Length: 113
Length: 115
Image 1 (cartoon, each protein chain N blue to C red):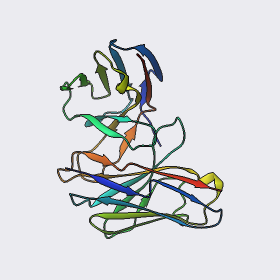
Image 2 (cartoon, chains in turn cyan, brown):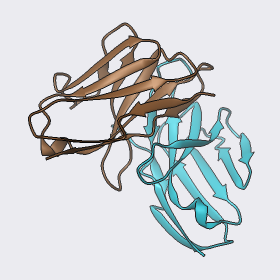
Image 3 (cartoon, each protein chain N blue to C red):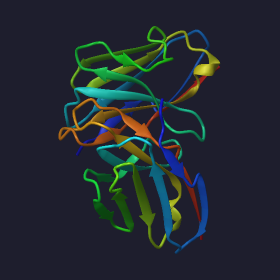
């Protein structure tokens, strides 16, 4: 199925550095979601965005819903070793129940102590 | 709130046998659940949408007779991999729409290995 273009594919950073990743699409989405997945686990929701231009924070994480509704970014400030994992963006086109999610390819984050 | 329990977390089965994976919403009712498949270092690929009380909707290329989905109650959906083969080995993940219909909660996944 169609996927979102997520970049970068992987990141290797030092503890304390800030991280930024983004997703773009040729289509409009009504909802953007950011998930983190650790090995052998299902994705865990980090931030949900429902309105174009919306900027939402969750602790050291900040995400924004692009004005065009075709993109979103996730920032992590002052990274720590437990931030390691794969981060996925996901978009939803409809707000009605049953609407599927479209996932990005993921960003593998490695944080060196 | 909004917890989804998936069982088993790991299963090893012999080629040709069938395996059932359960997905339960523990503290909310889920009229719709989704089943995904994920290969190593890849994203989640939607296999099918499971609707309570009706037939599942399968994505293109997913064999409905091989991946049987049953959503008999508002809190339980099951995925049965029939006549499993080694190429069916993968990480299977379910998700459910939580009560406010604006969030998707994922199960912890099932690692299936067919030998």
